[in-house]
Length: 221
Image (tube, rainbow, N blue to C red):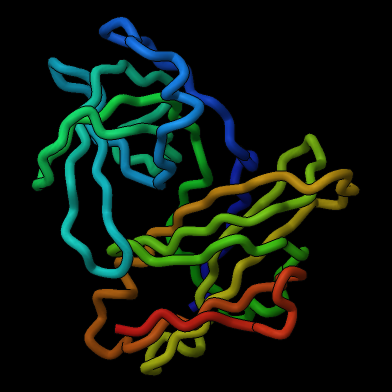
């Protein structure tokens, strides 16, 4: 069954989200020297500050990250790129963190088409592609245009009943000319398909100029 593919309203590439600290930062230098980068889920605000959920690679248990900042311009359950460090020394299902930056990224769910290989697949430069729980995450470089574009992960409807479902990273510059390469982060929720008992593997096809000899990447259960 074909589904009409709707363009994303805009490609948001490493757009810094404003936040207000609830306590004074003690050492500004740590924000530039000691930090981690992870794609996490913003869960909303509580009485202490913004709460995030971190998922390790594959099927690792989730960890809640409690911060003391107030995040703006992000809705609950959106995926974000978080720059942070731990402010506690105890590991467990919840950690306290110091947030140095919170950036919006592309959030979308897996889409479907009967002929996704016919959709625009403008080239990217792959940096990393990995799964955390029900999300397939992407870090790549794309050509900057200054205009809206679409970047989606689309499943081939003809393979939905197979044990290996073929998915394609579609990328449409909408006729604009690229100027320079720029970082891009995206997170695609594939849970509806990943939970199917018949699905054993998601095969993601990319038009990648960094590793052109690798046409696809497999995510197996």
